[in-house]
Length: 338
Image 1 (cartoon, rainbow, N blue to C red):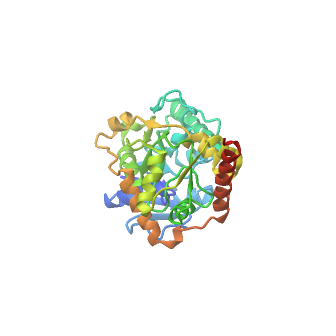
Image 2 (cartoon, one colour):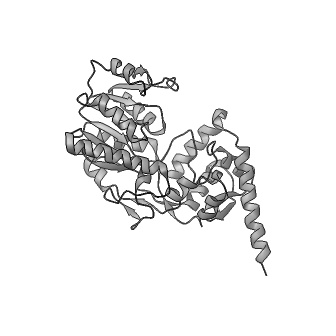
Image 3 (spheres, rainbow, N blue to C red):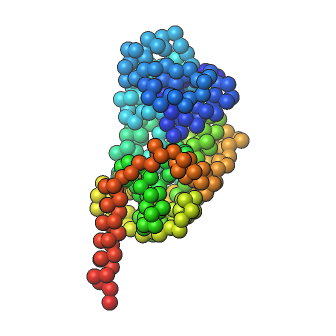
């Protein structure tokens, strides 16, 4: 199989790149070369900015692919560019959308691919929906061979997956745990969530590549494991070797307090219980199984981050914000206590 990835070094795409290289795939990555140092030796690099359409067109002038996948498209205009570049040059075009595009709030906690797409809270999700609609029209009207993939909350060894964190990533929450400080969990921590290790997403994704039954289809790829946020934070604390000190704060209050509450992704995604039905993926990829249990996967993540200081990005502003929110909550409770 000859495949081209636009991007190829992110959380999801890096795992797919690694597994495809082990299978001997004729894989090309088109990117700006900013994070290519750890790529497998047998991956072919086409160094260019995908937005430089003229240069990319010249690079690909005599090339055709079995699969082209864009991991870094977020707006319909970027898909319009991709269509101009790859129409007639690939047997399958895969767009990486997002499970956050599913209806919020949900009418049924069990999510299938037929769950409506609607997210009034998060512009990111609405843009992904618009991208999907553009591609589906190209498929219906012109036969452009698209497959839409919707991953949910995917993690790797470089970042601890959380519900509430700062703009600089999740390390500061881990730092608070290590310093025996309380950490914020949105809501009461009992809503259900799904975490999927990137190696498991890669298995499902590779099974869709070159799969004639996936043309014209939308498929989400997630683990079948459902966890409460309390369980998620407990697992992280356990991996760090500390006891969790949780403070539960309503998602609405977190959103109202500050942008540091990550309110778009919170109200538009993580504040809702989600349980994914992966039946469609398993019909298309019969041997798919997500085999990394979260408590095991997050131990690998924590171990890696503790051994690599470059991923321990301090976020003093977020730390102060957490203290302010927790103090305000405690003061409010004290002011009305009998």
